[in-house]
Image 1 (cartoon, one colour):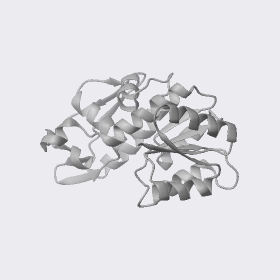
Image 2 (cartoon, rainbow, N blue to C red; image 1 turned 30 degrees about the vertical axis):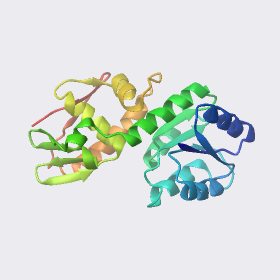
Image 3 (cartoon, rainbow, N blue to C red; image 1 turned 90 degrees about the vertical axis):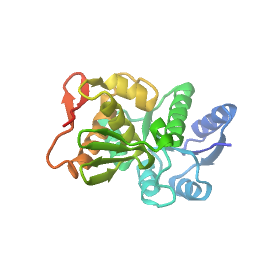
Length: 232
């Protein structure tokens, strides 16, 4: 059974999430503070961690950092829950390595959709990985088995989200991919104008590509529209 860790100091919300996730067929591990939450994360190795931001002593951001910095837990998908809606809070979470972000109050159906999207992403790699084929265009090669990109003789490893973003742009090379399509295809839902989510991940992706691209900018921003991959 798939295990979901829920860390929230609000007892009513924690219990409400637990009931709904169990009705959806998940096993739920509960923690009501950050310290216990991280300890249970290491002990139980859940498939997804759902973390509240505002908790006393050890907040959700700190728990997320500890999950990402620990060798055992670093790849566990994280959803942050918060009553705050400022963009800076989203950027902070994504910079830490959070996969998704949900602002309270939210519908339980929306949380379930996002959990399912993270589970799908963390368990599936592109179809080409099963045939051990590499995808090549010009000097750029995608290596799905390791979520890596190779440019000429240099290689960099991406996160699953970064790889999925790059792969979507790569498959549509020369054509703009809208922010709405990126959000729908990568995250599995289409939030209202949540383009900051895309901006943060594109920035991280560009930073990694810059290390191996010898000055060439492969990802072009189409302002007001989306992004485009430019081949050699």
